[in-house]
Length: 159
Image 1 (cartoon, rainbow, N blue to C red):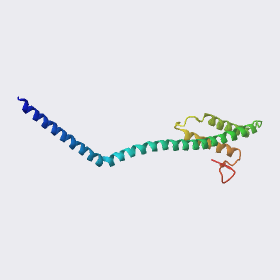
Image 2 (image 1 turned 90 degrees about the vertical axis):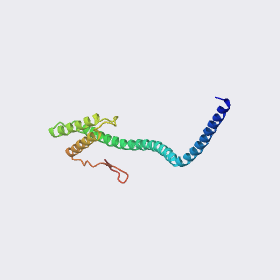
Image 3 (image 1 turned 30 degrees about the horizontal axis):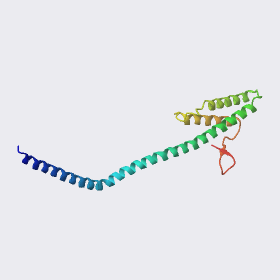
Image 4 (image 1 turned 45 degrees about the horizontal axis):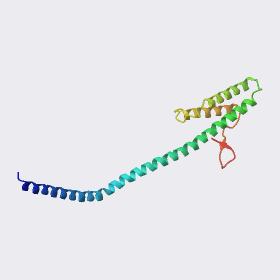
């Protein structure tokens, strides 16, 4: 093949390739403009998701701390109550007081077995309800009102 024929063919290919690149660049620019909304939406979603995840962890930690403190305060109150009454009834040996002491021992045992350090324990609320029930039973046996309130509106204890 003569060399004269090859060069024009190569030039034509280069010209076509250059035109395609220019057209591609202009269509890429147009596509960038058209797709900007979708791209910004996606970027905004990712940023919002990351920020929401962080704030969710912070809020969850605060919520857990608050309710964990309330639960700990409630159980601590029950334990203090039970230990105080156990000491008061220690010298009473009649059958009636023996039943009260056994109920107090049961309440203390339930409180001591309560899983304070395992928030993932699946029966946490169930065990807390059992402790509350036992506390009410003990209060009934001791003829004491079991409606303790901790609040700012009154100076009494509540749970």
